[in-house]
Length: 178
Image 1 (cartoon, rainbow, N blue to C red):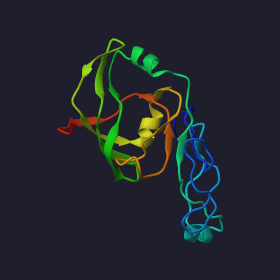
Image 2: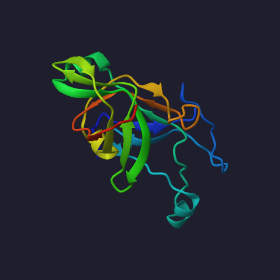
Image 3: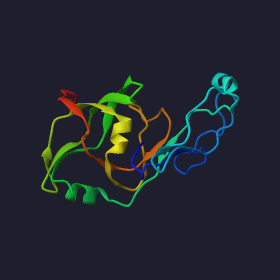
């Protein structure tokens, strides 16, 4: 389903992304691999659906960690003939849960890459992108690092992700956002 280098998991004890080892309903939260080696391994199950299927409930992730790679951001830029460097997303909202698509804006650092170098800043964009499709189009993966988890970095779940170089990311229109 995804590039074979993609592994996504949650772990309440993960360094730099610690969370409570239980949910607000008292369910235990343990390390869980959601995507391993590009393959879907688990989906969250409520108590209701677990009972309907005679399975164990599986709470959704309290944090999200994507396994990193070895490619540096500099190598990603140098290997790009023409592309856009996106350093931050903002105002992210779900569009279509069936294809796991989201919309949002770029913010605080959007740059044109030409001939393996950052050539100039560009205006912000709106994107409409299926996360599934994006994770199928991975070209390079850098070391994972903790990032702000929401528009207000004091709330939300901890997220640890690597920088990615992906093909065909859908920048759908120019945005007036600052």
